[in-house]
Length: 171
Length: 171
DNA sequence: GGCCCTTGCTTTCATTCAGAACTAACCCCC
DNA sequence: GGGGGTTAGTTCTGAATGAAAGCAAGGGCC
Image 1 (cartoon, rainbow over the protein chains, first blue to last red):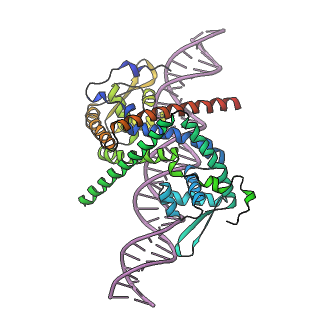
Image 2: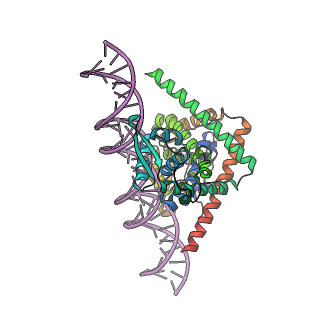
């Protein structure tokens, strides 16, 4: 696989100094996709779980009882995704969905026995994957990545906020 | 908690200490999605470019002439995505696609005048967005993020490699 | 109580996407 | 110079996605 056109041309002067491979949004997207891909191969595929399903399982497993909206907040998924993932899990006997006695609109999600078992199997494997990933970095670097992601995330939320204000002002 | 302790292969309290919000694959996915979202609002929406289109524009703008496969390597997109993005850009008069005289199968992509203009507009705005993102982090933290992503990416590729070998061995 | 607006969730629909099949052209080797 | 196998790109198909509509049920307000 030799690069022909690729190395034949030299960068354009001004704007040409832009390097996609150093562009943070691009790098985040690529690495995140790669990680997700590996995750999917190890879990999704092995246990028949999609990522949204795994997320629902993870938080319901942790909190025992949750409303779909709470799941949405905890997993950063919109309600449509939660609804679909929950329906699928219910269909496979991993999740039980009941009416919220305190609110006729609300639902309550909890794991079935089978779901608890699945949870018990999947969590250690998730930890294992994380360890495998962490092997490529020193402890310090891993911690730095964690902190940097926090800050970047916070910055995104701040920028989102500004955008919304701007949108409101435009109305 | 009325479940018989026996049927849970792994006790729930142990697995229950799993916090999705600290799980690196999850955090990467969330932050990456947030960044992409902002990027889309600023560029895609403003210039009518999707992210694949922007990537193609970015690398063709940089190298002047590229084959679709080279674009694929440079942008980490599969050939299907490249093909669609290129078709769309051609349709809007931003990109020109011609036969590679040296290889009848190959195509050559280059920007039209209009495409160059678009490139010139979009690159500075991309830089601006990156600066906005970087404002939330110190210079050191940003650099650490960059290094950590590199290593994580490398680790992913290493793990991918292992998987492939395992798959081959299984055949 | 009855009206209306809001909330919680599901369903629908139109788009996007990844993987597999397909076409065309090249290369190697006989 | 004509198969057999490979490579470059495009097209097709089934699944995933997100936005918006739909559907109940709650909570003021008169």
